[in-house]
Image (cartoon, rainbow, N blue to C red; front, side, top):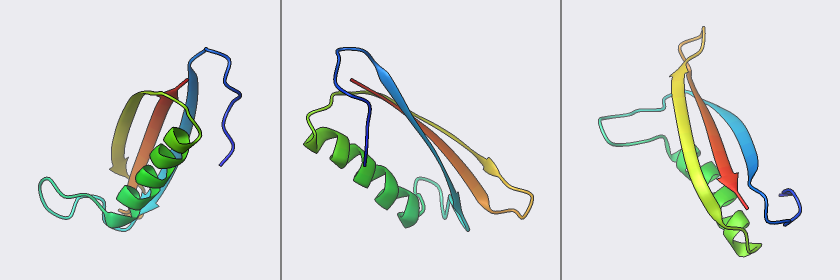
Length: 75
């Protein structure tokens, strides 16, 4: 993945994932989402970036699929 150049400033990486079922049971998340977020976080760390914060917003699309928006702040 391509991220902003390291310059000491905080940058944002924003992505949206549509999954057929986000919350399977209380406390469990869709494996597709876990795989995607872990891939991005690992890639950032492997490239030497510092992860500042991760924010998550979830909801449903018109087709009742889960819509998950994630914001990652890094520098």
